[in-house]
Image 1 (tube, one colour):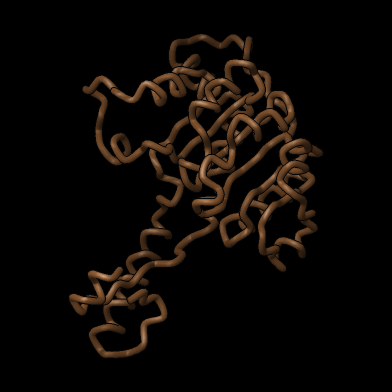
Image 2 (image 1 turned 90 degrees about the vertical axis):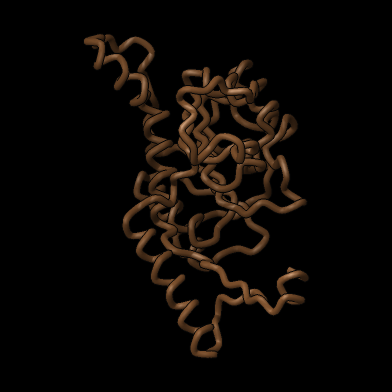
Length: 246
């Protein structure tokens, strides 16, 4: 940001736009993986109506662990409560809104060991890089479901492959990936993907990727546009902009 200051440039941001959009996408990934909808879709297109390998589990009564209880995390917890799940959460700064939902804040080892489903909704910091690594996976239930719509580098992808191989991870949903910069937001369908880790992950039938689209709803795009225009209007008029960084 030093260069911007030296050049006299102002930098503004869009801090939040539609937490529910991201939470709903995480739920969609969760249900797709649980009920094997992605596999059933492909089968029925080929007139294969076998139920073999499509057994899921009932979400009601299971334990969901949410890491990060900002606006998106709370939106996720609100939906999970509707499933009748036990709600655990970890965040250095507990949310009053989450507590009102009956959420139990616990430490990470407890969340790892007791959760049937773990959903990530925290920012990436130097302290939580590869938060889900080999040591974390070892603490989890066998067959745990993990969904990440937050930041790719929260998960050690190589360790996730090993956890998938030994069935510690039962299913993995990723809207983000730690090396997504060279992959996402482009059409690579005619290319040979050079990222071997991504290729190994995407080859697993119990891994579901989407291309960083959790935010992508009409309402979210409208909110982003409105906030951006308001930021520009504030700057143009010399008014205080609450979203200004510099």
